[in-house]
Image (cartoon, rainbow, N blue to C red; front, side, top):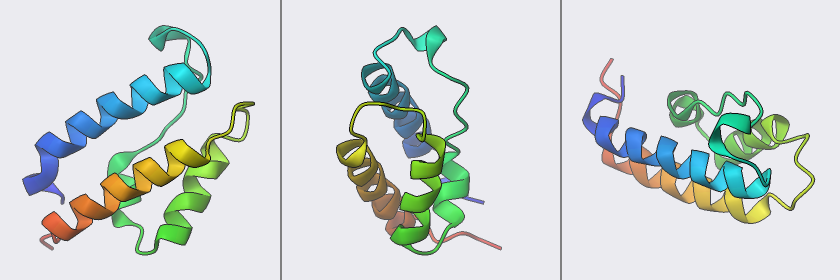
Length: 87
């Protein structure tokens, strides 16, 4: 598991929520049920796979999502370097 990056995971989840409220132009409680699962993204090896996964989730968003996705992937990859999962 990604135990040693747990605090960063929480911060990243908050950042994601904040970004989504902007992308969807709504209050936090009105964000569509998006399962952007940080752990799942951490488990995906390549940034292409990660990007594809996030794009899939944001398919309903009418605002441009590129900046959000690249920011998210930067953060995910930084965390992947910090924590190598312990089997």
